[in-house]
Length: 254
Image (cartoon, rainbow, N blue to C red):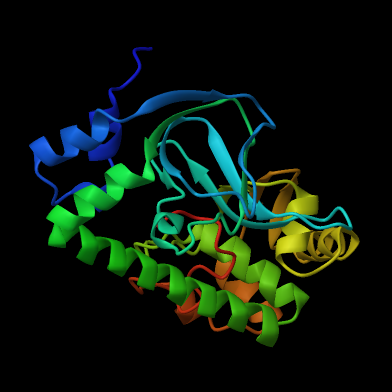
């Protein structure tokens, strides 16, 4: 498969929709090709944020390490996504999270100075960046609400329903296949429960005829009845452009 050009990788991001070709090409000319092995870190928390990246292929996990061995996962980014664009605007520019490849991954790296120079000449880009950061803030508030107000079964159900219902709001009340983007241990930490508690909750859903499957490949059998079982409002997950709990788990890109 032919490698896409840095210009093509940048143009694929909605963030650069309003940037003209000549300005975007100037940014693309600064790119460096960066292959990353499975399990290799791209950057660590607290390191200088001197580059941002486009993900050409593979998958990147953004997490905060724990001395107790249970990393807190914040986001999983796939091909086509931008990585570490927000820290470019911090003072001092330091990475707030650690990034590692969860499979063989290929990136383009662009220097911070080149992005800042482009922003100085493109008010449209600055407005788009601001809107993206506000969306992340809303997701963070939703996640705090989700973790503080809901019990373990509601947090898990919310997560499964958000996998089922994408942010365009097209949900169906019937059997649907879903795939967990992370393993059980990492998901448990992110939902503020132990792996044992998560396994018990999944088993309860299976016993109630709400869920089928093992590992990461699951089938959500009856979303409306799942909501009823855990005490959630099913209307929050159907027919809305953005569910009320959108981004509770904060695992999807903008």
